[in-house]
Length: 134
Image (cartoon, rainbow, N blue to C red; front, side, top):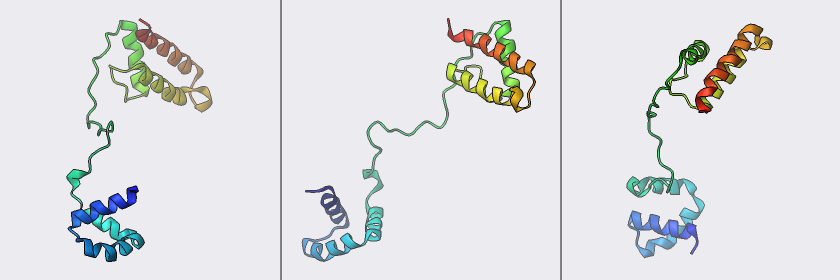
């Protein structure tokens, strides 16, 4: 039995068809995919569940604990916050790397920034990178 025939049988059972009407109805179902879509609307929604391992994401991300910054790391974090507003105090290494790349696009001399600001950005990135080396 193929998947399509078993699916049609399920639809017929849900719609309450008798076996005598199945022959007339099967030719319509084979030729009319819109009618199948109509029948899909008749199937109870509780029977359609999410596939195993695919769960809806929570609407709000859990907040991470803020890092314990030294004075120099706090200054570097404030420098990043001036340019990238979405960086939280509990950032991960990946988020820091993304923030550095976004700020580099703004402060790079080829993009209209000054060389001194770009060098400061690189120094502040190295200072904040020490958080993840320990």
